[in-house]
Length: 326
Image 1 (cartoon, one colour):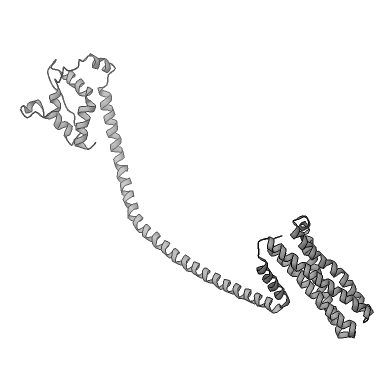
Image 2 (image 1 turned 30 degrees about the horizontal axis):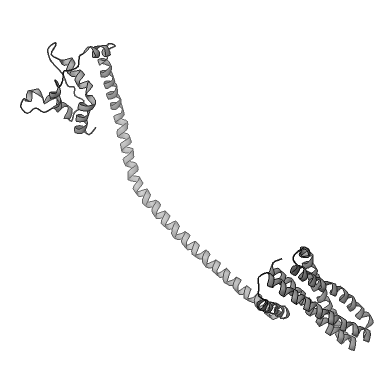
């Protein structure tokens, strides 16, 4: 049991002791006078005392494990238990008071019960102080807390003020919640408005873009047959140049000697006839044209073609790509 729970249980027990003391006073008056008014007061107090006893009994039934705990916990439990035992005897005495009326023997028993109540109060207070002190509090501050709790238990007005204050606080919380809901609602409205504006702006930009995409799609659809025909034509041209002995024929062609054909890929300013046409074709803007190599038999046409093929990556593609951006 934590200190706060122990404090609450002990407060209930202290309230029980105080109520028992009040009953002793009323019982003493009834024993002396024996009037109906005093009897009614005694009956009312007895009923309150019985209710307080039942509350204390429930607390003790929930805290039976305290008997197996440290000594200070066990002492507090036993002090509360002592209150419960006293209540059982005291209620029986009050029942006998109703039957016997006034008399000195009853008066002497009242003195005995008053003494027992004072002993219970002393045991309960000291046990509670030790319990909460061990749990982490200081004796002086805990004594003030106990006195404050007893005072609150005695004065119902203080409790009522606390309840009223709690009601006021809850009302403030309700107002705050209403303000928060209003703020969230306003934010939602503003956000929805912004989203609508963004959606409309996006739609305005997408409409012309969609039209442009449709136009591009139409052009691609129109160009597709032409592209297909071009691919087919190129494939046919390549296939027409192929024959089964092409690799054998290539291997039969001897490689050019030294830098024999280097002039083909250079600009020779001294003899324009040795250059020009091939480089112009490579660097031209119409790559689909064919470049024809002419010459009489044995002039080296096949050797030149093999030279260009052997150096296609280094000499041909580089020059053609730089000029055409391919």
